[in-house]
Length: 190
Image (cartoon, rainbow, N blue to C red; front, side, top):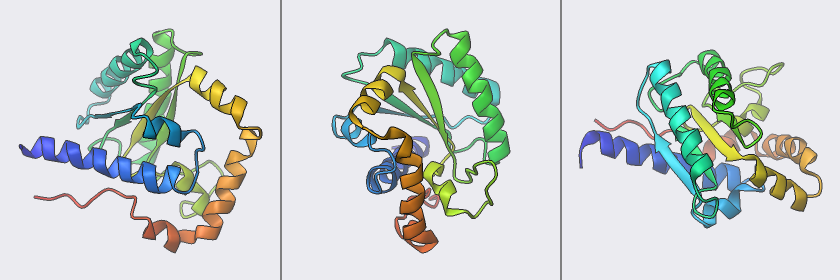
């Protein structure tokens, strides 16, 4: 196996570990478990660093998700290990990804959520534990179906309380507990 394929497999393994231990394990997203256990999460790794090329991948993956049978692919995680290490650059990129969504006329059908190792909500300090709700091992775009969100919210009576519950969970867990989950990127092997 070549080194690029090894890196791709590692990026997917790291992302899957984060999904299982943090997102599902801490129940940060009560909707994630069902699509994960049904193998409806599609993982795409793009090692590019050029924003235009990455946006082309975003467009390709948005269209592929829109065209896919939801029973086979309900959601896509687009992982970008070599790009957008600076959170502010990533945040700007997310706005461009939303423009791509609109240009494809898929807004209202799909949406883009974001995760980043240095994610920081407006009005928080960089080390606030609340930021961990959106901290993944790599810069990642989560492409998801609006219909899936609507179905999930319909069966989850107080969906608007998820964020507040997540903050409580993370505050109880603390930074040491978060670190113990080991949900960051694996050290790169030569």
